[in-house]
Amino acid sequence: MSKFADNTRNYRQQEARNRALHVLARIRRTGALLSAASREEHIDPRTVRKYVGSQLHRDGPDLLPREMFLITALGPVPVSVRGSVAASQLGKHAAAVQHFLRTGDSSALAEFQGKRVGNHDLIVDTQLLSTLAEAGALRSQDLYVPPRGVA
Image 1 (cartoon, rainbow, N blue to C red):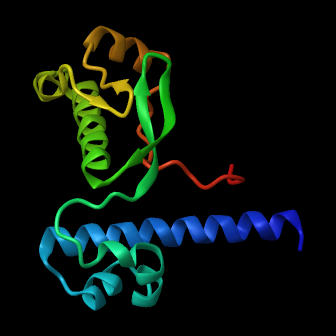
Image 2 (cartoon, rainbow, N blue to C red):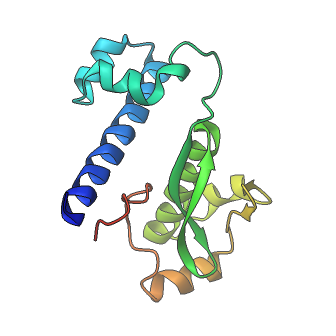
């Protein structure tokens, strides 16, 4: 098998896993059935069970690891976060940063003062965020790290 075929398979598997995580989130957020949530995310329910089956019948947040971007003083860096709570917090922080950069309103960043995800502080320093944005380091991007081998 060629290296290209391996990269394609890894990409497809990572995309399927990401869609499965979206199904899990939709089920927990809306109470939708697996079949309906899978249909909305364009993924077979069997594939969802393959990637997140152990989490489908759990109460509370899942503990599945995700590769996501975290904003640091050097710009976004990929980190592995464990669970939907940490993933949601990173998503909300990224949204607050983008809101600040678009509007200049930093009030949404106050929620993240002193908060950490993993071993990383969430940045709320507006001067630092503005400097990173001016340097082009905070372009609006996907929160999830693309699969390895994908440019």
